[in-house]
Image (cartoon, rainbow, N blue to C red; front, side, top):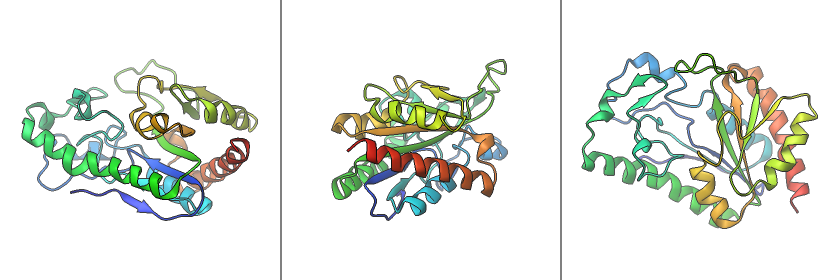
Length: 239
């Protein structure tokens, strides 16, 4: 079993980082250039550091993934084919192409299921009033170089947009160009929040930060301050 990293905290917020790691467990061969494991296809760059810094700043618990999404994507239904990707941003993941049903089931039972069970356990134990989901995105996709991604931050939501609706003007008031369900739509890619927030009626904020703003310690401090202040304001508004 591959367990997520869990950070303690007392605040009524649970921080979640689905794509924080580029680690490939022993015995798994993805069949790709090792250099790609530092690329955005393998992890959401900067989110591990940001989730940890936010947990400290807010005194909030956090559940942080410890396995690359190229092994299995925590933010997808494990029964969907795309949960174990055969390609990402134009790169073929050879090791996943001929994955046996038994190996796929092992990845689900040893990695995906424990991650989501821990999130459920933390919610049961902590009774948070807000889930804060941290992701990052690349300024440009290799597979679609003409696509413009001008937002330094985007807010993702599905049916429950309570927190996103409140957070958007708070971030915009800082002069930020805030994407609403950009660069991805939470109506399409929202598995973790659908499962743990929407299904329980819990407010959540799905945050996507462009990863060229998460490259240095100063960047992490910058976004930690912004998101911590925004979270405090959300908690007051969501009472």
